[in-house]
Image (cartoon, rainbow, N blue to C red):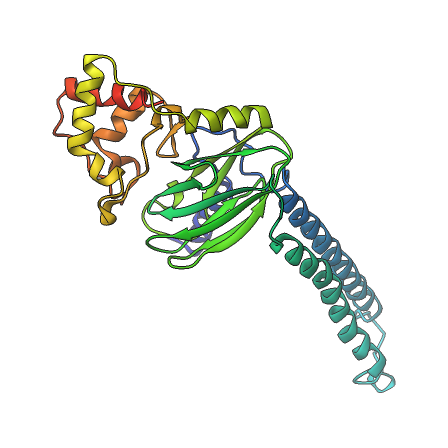
Length: 339
């Protein structure tokens, strides 16, 4: 292959990487759910303000540099019949050297002032009875959300009220993760053995996409979660639903599914096995997604139970290929009716 052909292939690959870098593989959320340039929360708005401000500073610096460059290029260009007398020009200019040293420092200071201010503003712990506290725990490869004041926990789906501060206490159990909701702002490291704190809010009701922003293993790209921002009345209904006792098991098929669950699933999903700790499935029937990446329906749940590693490589959940079709149906019905 010629050198020209190799460069063409590299150019096509580089262009493909640039295009694919903006793709979102989510199957359960709208395509704009990861847009940091359309923030729906205070932290996101302040971050966007800093982005615009830094771009403005860079454009001013770029314009000045290009103006000087064009001036020098035109004034001192080589012209036929004209010989440049270098003796008339100094090899340095103290005033100019001071100017182009002071101006970048001034630009950095101008950017640092709002950055430091916003950092302290967003790090302030909110006070008041209307502040919602949520404890976040990162696992490979799923998210656990605890509501300590309300007395329950869930996984993969975070519900918050619109217009109120939500204070997160974030930690991990295994490796490093990073908690990030692009549309709401903020990105916080998830470190085992340490509790980091973050405050966010949502100014508009809707679904927002949460991501792990720290490479954590084979399914890092699939360690997603959903943020459901609701009006206060809808949020209160969800709290009541999550706080109520689970629906009783009624049908014979559900009872069979309960027996399978108690014999095969409860050890991991009740927290009795620290090496294979799974999410609490008490109210699994109230969720809108499966494993954070699949739409909630019977077909996807069966696919997940049969071979979870084919959907999330490296997950600690084992496949349930030892169940026959009738047993798989029973377990699926039992889980989907856990409301």
